[in-house]
Image (cartoon, rainbow, N blue to C red):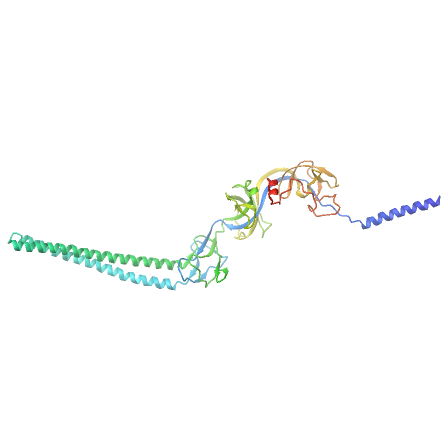
Length: 414
């Protein structure tokens, strides 16, 4: 009897030891969980883009050869309309204006002399003509020969009057043309002199542009000699800022003007700005040079003014398609496809079938199968090894094709 007791105790000790060792060397882990949320459900399209000014003006070098920049407004400074932004060396233009102004004085003096000569000669010619006419009147009744001589003198006086008067008028008109030509040269010289100082047509921030210098490009600076018409400074008006972004052709039909947008700067992720879709391109373009993906350009107006908004900053946009006041929802990674059924796993690791509806980038609507506050697993607890949320989750049908840019994936999204 004692023999069986000892054998039983030994078996019990062996079993206890086995389970103790198993407990020591078995790795346990906690399955991450989340709760079913009940609240506003936002359906949106997330895109990224670049901050730009709605209104910007590019200041270019005037159409004058041989100019050299002598001064630039500091980059990043804010200028008002009419403030100088770029100055060029104006030595040549000043000298040209002075020469043409002197020439204009000479031409005007010549015109004045021509007019005076015209007045004097016209009076003299009129007087000579009147004398010839009186002489003819006095002698026309005398002898035929004398009358014919008087008549000939009158005809010569008339021809002389007209010929010399026409010449005097031509001299005056020629002088007037010379004055006008010289005045045009003065105006051109003054215009070129004025162009050596470029002023701001709108208020904005000074942004230097890159120009070719030899074999490379670098920002414009004092001492540069730009080509005529070359862009030098960009002047964005910071009072109205936009985000230039794109949406895929799959989502383009869901985007329209005046839709609300939430804008977040990559540099300041804790700030959120209200915006709206201002414009959507009517034609698609390739996303990149070698890409097969088509996108539509979208312009988003930022409805708030903030000095932190600067051109060139990157931003994220959530284009709001719909807002539903009260919806049950769970994270996307909590939903799995098992044996043709859409399921979630409760905190106790039991499987539960659910019906899903609309989804956004992070969550999916639960139509049936769960209640607000239910705690669910964020990973598949039936897997042999632990994983991060969503790493080994079986992707449900509603999620397939979310990031697939292949034709098949795009078809599923439609």
